[in-house]
Image (cartoon, rainbow, N blue to C red; front, side):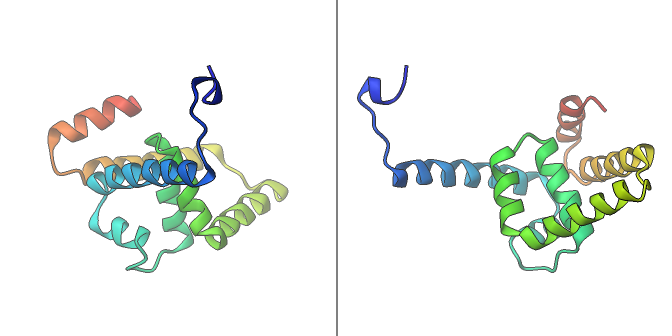
Length: 131
């Protein structure tokens, strides 16, 4: 049943507030799991390279934090464009190596899991990712 049929007609402001709340919750969850360095890069307290951006965007999406992922990418459009340009170049010049890309992603995930403070957290994250 639609919101309007139930007598609930959210305003654009209400929708924006719900969206921001979801992003904040996901950000707090990610901050509870990531390193201090990664948190500082996301908060703009530390410079973020294109490779850092690519790694963080990948991890955020792998964790299923889609609202945060979209927000993160839109806040760093210039870095997103550089990643897209790199992908486009690799495709156009047939330099894509799926095995290399997969190994890089797996390394990011392994490093992310290994920096978690508690063994139980590492175990649960490994279960989520089946690694």
